[in-house]
Length: 194
Length: 194
DNA sequence: TCAAAAAGTAGACACCTGTTGAGTTATTGT
DNA sequence: ACAATAACTCAACAGGTGTCTACTTTTTGA
Image 1 (tube, each protein chain N blue to C red):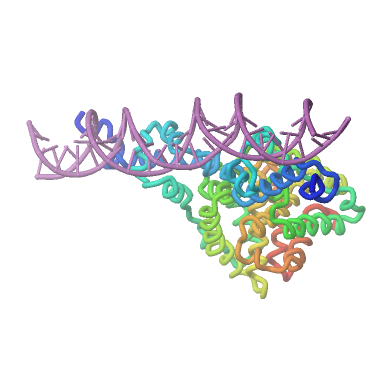
Image 2: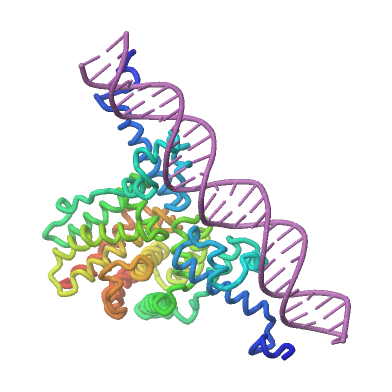
C-alpha cells in the first residue's frame, strides 16, 4: 500500500483529482448562486477541501471563476449549408446541453454576466466570435451580423427563462414542444430569403 | 425664510423628497451593480443621506429592493384584437422604455433575478400574471400560454442583450431595425393561424 | 529507505457587510 | 414662541468575506 492504493486509476498526480473536484464544485455553486453569493469557503466545504487549497490551485476567486466558465462550442459540426439545419443544431445543442447539465459553463457565465462586468466581457467575446460570426457567415445578407445577434438573443432568452429563471410554462414544457415553436421563428430572423 | 425656502415646491413633507431620492439612487445602483454588489452604504453616499435613514425609511435592504423594482405595465392599452398590433405594442413598449431609462424597474429586476431567488420570484410572478396571461388571452390555441411564454422569453432575450449585456451588433443597431427583424418572428410564435 | 517536493491545513489579517439603538437636529402644528 | 414630532446622524456590533503566511502531512523519485 505504498502508492497505488490511494492515487487511484491512471498515473495521475493526486493534485489533479482535487483540482478537478474543486472545479466541478465551483461550477455547481457558481451556477446555483451566481458569482457574488458563491464563497470560497462554501466551495471548500462542499468539495471537502481546505479553503487555502483553492487559492493554492487557482490563485484567486476571479481566476477560479474564469477556469470554471471556460468552454468550447463545436461550431464546425453545427454549421451547415442549410440554415434550417443550422438553426436546429444550435438551438437543440444549446438547450439540450443546458438540460443535461444545469451547471454547464455557459449557463454559469450567463447567470454571472448580469452582475459582473468581468463575466459580461467574457460572454460578449465568446458569443460574438464563436456563435454570432459563425451563424452570420451562413447568411447572405447585408444585415447578417445583426440577424445572427437577434437570433442568438432569442435563443439565450429562451434558455435563460427555461433553465435559469424557471418561468412557469416554458420551464415545464417538453423540450420538443419548445423547439417546435421557437425554431421557425428564429429561422425567420436569419433566413431573409424565405 | 421659515419653511417655504427649503421644503420647496408643493406642500410636500420633507421626508417625501429624501425618500424619493433614496429610491431613485437605489434603482440606479441596483441596475448598475445588481442586488448583491449594491450596498446600503453605497446608496447612502450617492444619495447624500445617512445609511441609517435608508433603513428608517424602508426597513431592510430586501424591502428597499422590492420598493425599487415595483412597476406597472399598462396591459389594457397594449392588448388589441389584432395580434400584429399587440406584439408591436409590447415589443416597442418594452424596448423603448428600457432605452429611455436604463434604470427602469423591470431592467433592474431582470438583472437581479439572475443572482437572487427573491428577485426571480418577483419577476416570475409579475411576468406570468401580467404579460404572459395577457398575451395568451388574445391567442386562440391550446398552447396559448406556452406560445406567450416563448414569445416573452424572446423579447426579454433581446432586451437583455441590447441594454443589459450590451452585445456588439444588437446594442449598436437602430431600435427600428431590431424591431423590424424581431417582430415578424415573435408574431410567428403567438399567431399559429398565419 | 529517506530526503525532497508536493499537497493540504490552521489561524490570523484587514476589510466590508446589514442592522441596531441612542442621541441630536430640524420641522411642524398651534 | 414652543412643545411635539418627524428627520436625521453617529458610533458600534456581530458576522462574513477574500487572501496571506507559516506549518504539518503526504506523496514522490532515486
